[in-house]
Length: 343
Image (cartoon, rainbow, N blue to C red; front, side, top):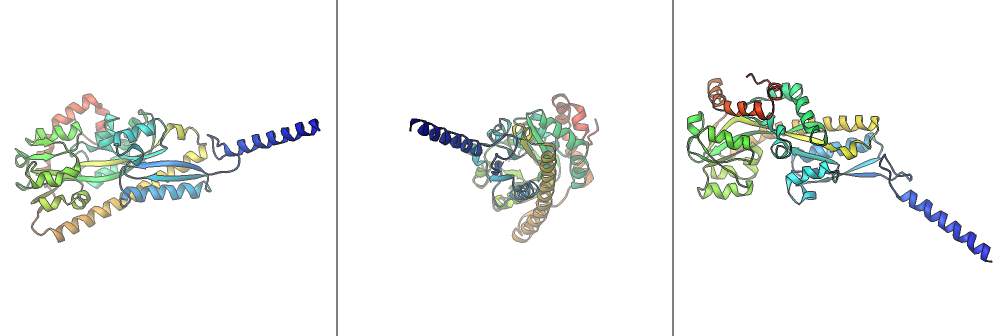
């Protein structure tokens, strides 16, 4: 009887061990039972953004090309880092999150070289963007991001940052003198405003409307879709489409995830990211065109300068030269020249 009990106990123990093995997942792929591996994708934008459309496309391709082996869970508005954008990048670096989308301005707080494509008037047209971001410039930035302990796969875009204010139309550097302008917290953008004779003010984008309305600031700069959606134009009289700073989005995965993928999966992830970010860029540009049309139709009293002439653009570029001189020391001439800048 005791022998039978011992045999039965051993059988239950063996069955239990088999069950445990089936439930545990492998770092190299599916669990032994074929369970789907769930990956976390963190994005800084909301569910109605082009970022989200890119993330959804990536998820769709990965699920399809890996036959359901990988499932992508998308978390918008930096939910995983409680809204702290810099912490969102750090979570990717440590492998807490698997996939991440963030723009150059935020990335520069972790990897200073990430700001280079956003230097003033470095890429003043989409033709310049496509030429250099798809060439040596983009390759150099991807290499720089790799030095931060992540694996960059593709680059999307938030678009061009334009300027609005309550005081005067802006068509020359002299028009900027004395204006209090809200800018993002990057050294590059703060330094430029000072070089132009303006007074840069850093504050949350959520405070811009009230600050402009109350006269705390004279104006601000942002992409046209955000100027529209955040209702900044309601408290502005002048808009200049000066394309002064291009803001790319970096689509990266954690090294922790990347090192678990086989060669075929790495190719799938890379191609999926490139396709997803191409969709995102296309939607972003169409969205910017639509936003401009909406602005012209809905804000009849807003004075708009659609585009700077070559001479006007040259005057602004001349004022920004010290930023490039400092950039050569901080980032290296080779990196900046990879985007077509001539020293």
